[in-house]
Length: 340
Image (cartoon, one colour):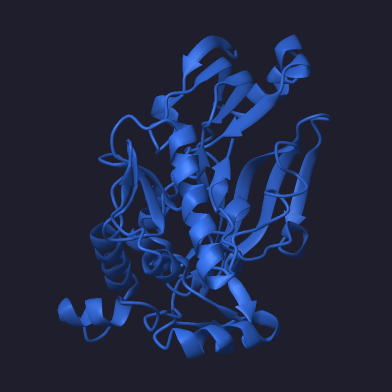
């Protein structure tokens, strides 16, 4: 039996720690809860917002509608061979907890995605990625429920329309489809370990690891992220605020002549991906603070809530950062965070 609450404070439900009020709030513990909810007048008449772990959202105002909090739990083995295992995971499971579950069982493929905040349902929505791995590589299918009709929909990998931190769920189906489960296939042996990206190799060397395993790669990633990124439980943030932009080869060559140290990585369609953190730092924002919001002192890609910042203050700071990067480099940064 669902319980729709009124005037619920959303501060505990977003990692920025922004105080925002939900006119109506309901927690979905089972798929049947959603079907029951769809019959309620409040569901039919109010604006709806689906909320998972709140790790990639910035509230800039109260929600004058219905917040549907995803709390679905469960991990099931749907298929298994000597080489691989396929898992159907409820979308409300905490992503890092799920990764640790897989690491403990020596199932490979997502160890590089350790310590990414949020839920399993948010993983395909954002097509989360880190240290040379994107979740789309292991996803088989995503199941969801269409909010208006209540029909169950199944999306294969192609149907998810994955892109760089993008998917159909973040675009055309935003707030129209409730992701209920994600099915992933992981390796049980002969794992493909990705250790050449970022600081993983150096960190493994510091750990005196000469023969990397899923466990050691995960530990290295956790060490790097913990050192570089602020813990949202201590300092409110939503991880990377902006995506790393891609620019044309011609634009990159032109900028490189003026900024010889500018990093760049080959991307699709002969474009170049430039680290947003580098661009932001060159504009002098690293460690800068405005009112209660600021750019993190160690990772300029992360905007933090230092002290009772409002969503509007954080957004204002982000837009100032964006404007200065545009002015200096003629590059437009795109927010990775969902701004509400």
